[in-house]
Amino acid sequence: MKKVILIDDESAGRKLLREYLEDFPGYVIVGEANNGVDAVKICNKFRPDLIFLDVQMPGLTGFEVLTHLAEIPQIIFSTAYDEYALEAFEVHAVDYLLKPYTKERFSRALARVPADESRNSVTPLAESLLAAGAKYPARILVNKGRRMVTLKVEDIIWVEAAGDYSRLHAEGTTYLSNYGISAIEEKLDPQSFIRVHRSSIINLQRVRELHRYGKSYDVVMENGTVVRVSRSYLDKLKY
Image (cartoon, rainbow, N blue to C red; front, side, top):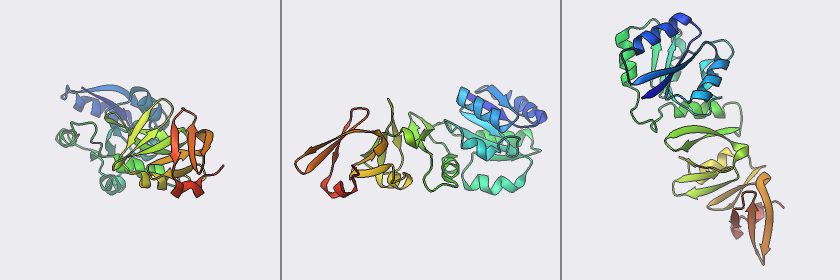
């Protein structure tokens, strides 16, 4: 059963979506919103699997809504404005319903929703929006189980290389990123995050202690983790 939220500033648009979804028992509507601000609140409360998202709305646009979501669901855009269609498809949204659309067209859109929730086709869009307007984003996309969630960069304690991926250690939780540690390093502000080992990045704001052993150093993070400082990265360490 997939949880669905309908986001459209027109009541007629939401009513049509409700009617069309009646023929699909595998989907249950858990909420609706008629503006961008409420859309963010209800999505973060119910964590839907799929949202039907209008683009032009009061408060926040559909694209702006995505930058405030704690988890990134599958998305089908539903709008009367065709000017956004190319952008939506370029970032691999599930589909783009241009109003007015038929029940047959709606059915084709729903058929494109991936059965595996870990295959989130809208991830490139969410990442580009989170990074827009800032050299170093305040939040980044990470994996939490089978879901894509947004993580505040300031909450990252340290980053650990995991083959072609990275593990981001935050307070009480470890997240997996699809990016390698070098790619993650490029996303983090060097004023706060420094590479201390080919396999480790630390958040300077989360350092508890620094221990010296001859010419070697260990950094004790606030969660108690001890991170070894490689000699080749020693000159980067600020203390």
